[in-house]
Length: 113
Image 1 (spheres, helix red, strand yellow):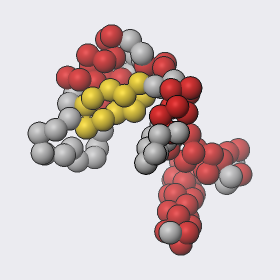
Image 2 (cartoon, rainbow, N blue to C red):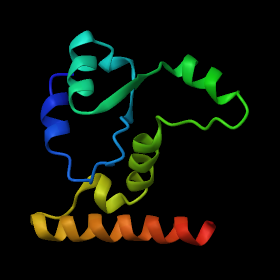
Image 3 (tube, rainbow, N blue to C red):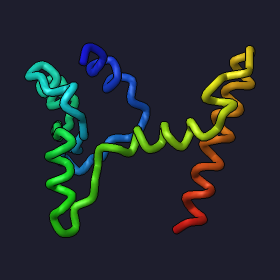
Image 4 (cartoon, rainbow, N blue to C red):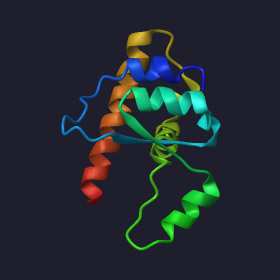
């Protein structure tokens, strides 16, 4: 909650220019008026749902779960024991393994589609 402004300021992705606010999915840990204000000022519409609300929305036809992408990706990365335990002492070798794992995950995802 305390790092929302710094995180949004450090975003490196390009923002849509169609004038419409992008949606930012957050969990209940971010359910504060201050966070909603910061997110709105950054040009996003905050979507803050609990697990139960997410489950109820998912039951509607054509609606997909939107919140668990980060948790799913962390789970995929944790399958690489070398990243989970961090055997490397040097930062560059750890970063190389992290990039290799992300590339392998993306490749597997592309093959399954």
